[in-house]
Image (tube, rainbow over all chains, first blue to last red; front, top):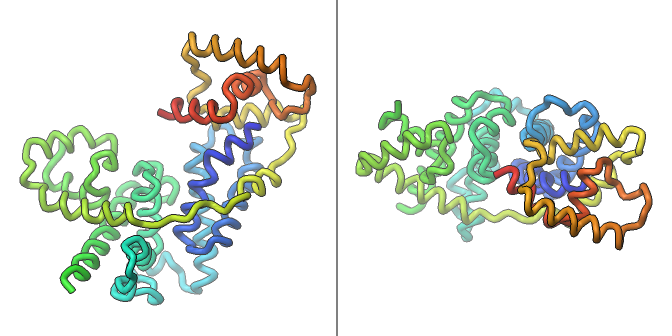
Length: 162
Length: 154
């Protein structure tokens, strides 16, 4: 079935994006299922819409943002530079495994920076598609990526010095 | 025009791998890098270290059975509306249209059609909404379709 081809092709990316943003397998699964439920409803009117992968990532990101806002009753958009107090970079550096450490460091970034890194650095999405999926300009995406990478470099350098 | 400042911005935002840089600026950025490599060594090394750290990031696989659960929620493709839905799906799966290398296509079609005639049940309950879909699956199978879609996407 063509539906199966669509799911097999795009579901893994949607799930990975949701998991990276939520860090919860069950919630990521719920978001992935909800994304495709919306896709099934949209398909009859699909003509002239965006590329499916971009559309699916946009839906998934918005669903993740909703869930994160419910978890943290603070408007994320109003605090773009504030890191998650639950995991400071220096705390994250206590992780022993290199993979776990970088995961924790990325998790400590502000939500929008994490979204930008997830799409571009981890999923290999192009800048225009990633910006469209996030609903921001390419310049804003670049700014988020630059700030995220500078913060991570700084934290890693401090850890090496220590 | 590519400047030192812009190239440093690209490295800062997208990392050390030129393939991660915006396609529209990549060629000019590489030319600048080739002309003045020493100016960007430090930035590239710092970015490379972070790129390597990203590569160590662990990512679990999607839960088993998730695809099946999603498909269980998919609408049934009835013959009455199936052509429309099938066409939408085909547009999404093949955004550039079906473009087949002529020789390979003909051979695959012949093999697929022969195999299909010999093995497929002659019912309308096969889930295919168009002749193209039926031919793609019968001729190439699912793995073949996946490979073909990757090729189409380039």
